Amino acid sequence: MLDTVPLQTRFLDHADHYARWSGLAIGIEVARQLLTIESGDITTPLVLAVTAFGLCAVAGVLIGDALTLRPQEAVRTASLAPRLVRDHVPPRMTPLLLLEAGSLLALLVMGAVTASSSSDRAGGAGRAMEVVCDGVRSSVGPWPGLYYSGPMFGALAVATPACVWALRRIAFGPGDHQQRRDRAWAIVGAWGLLVSCQVLLVVLTFLVALIDGPCAGPLGAVTVMVTCPLGVLSVFTLGWSLLTVVAPRAVDDGVTGEGSGEDE
View 1: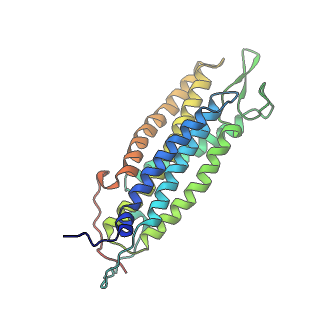
View 2: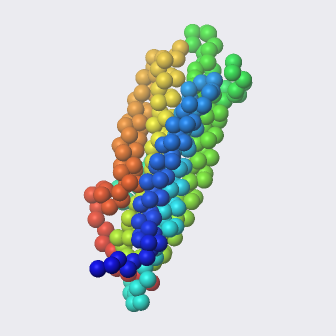
């Protein structure tokens, strides 16, 4: 029997998959290219690579969601239950990702406030912290001041509103509960990928700067105790987010939601 489904329709049926995977692949390649750029330190290429990878992942998911075919049934039913965005996002992982995002903002703000405003030897300001140990003034770095945190702030400022808008469009748009769940989870996973990568990079930056710095000791010990659990959490959410972007239906966080069928 001949296949009568148009090629364009068959492609659009899986366009979201192609876009998500392409976003990850492009992000990996862009990150690889950015890591090879010449810079005065290794931290700048790392920040740019992590930020670019996260933004490419978010862009791929958003483009895939925009290309997703909407249901064309002649008869559709509507539920009297109000639609809420939180009914379609991962109920356990979303609070963890929000906690990570809040912690990331707090760390970036702290890094920006404590960073030195004077230029260093390479001619840049805001990428080291001045400390005084035993009466001797020295610099601790690389430090997540505005020199490094600027691209991270920018990525969050662009990706977060775009993802929130997409989640609202999914929650109040057509489709059954499973379709909306898959699309919403993929978007949360992409945003979580951006947040988790940045949290892990900032935590490593703090650890390297303080533990290997001249004031290692009590300050370094406190840093390890505070930031290491956050780093471990970011590794876990990074793996979950990556798997969710690749295959949303293969991931569950222990809570099963019941949908309302087709919505008008």
